[in-house]
Image (cartoon, rainbow, N blue to C red; front, side, top):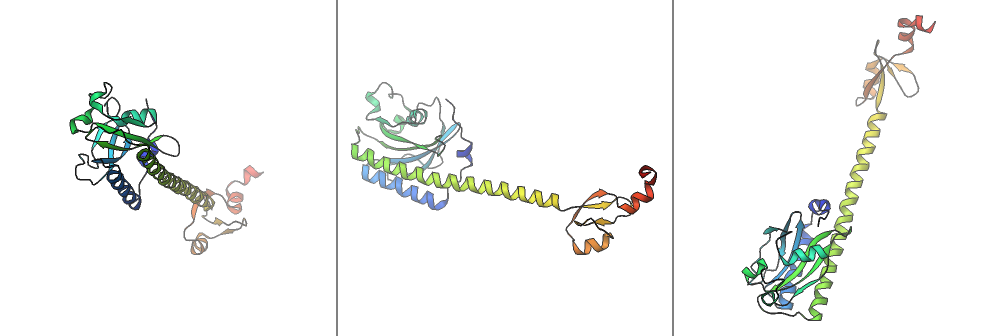
Length: 233
């Protein structure tokens, strides 16, 4: 399964949002009483530990990454399905008995997808435990509230970045128009300049008043009469 990750790769998360997300991870780890709460970021083809709770026994660290698809990681299923995944005990579940996180003694998992405004995956919000854990409905609701908060942050960041890009494109377009409007006809023979009222002036007079002007070739009426009178006839 392939997902568009262009926006995810280009999306810049501001420092103040990262600080907020760090606090979310810390609170989740403390309230749910698990070693690890993570915000994972999907950057095709990898998934990266983007934020990790600063809990004592957390084996995960920001910046760690793995190739996602085919990895067998819990988060792979969440990204693929865009749905919640609950694994109370991977050791007794044949679908998860060989999950790579078991090597870190992370045997239970609860995770939710984090989606961008275009519904492509940003990553996951998840908690992991080193013991059997069913996770109560209250804990699920808590995670969903934090997941929704993260998605609202992403929505604002996404829209602001899109607006900045649109404004830049508009600014570039206006600059191009201004450049085109600034092209000044100059006689290829005598080098006189034609102004917007169709009058011709010596080049030094025009440059004194318009030092930033750019020029395109033309021919003034006097030179046309002198050089191409036979064509007029």
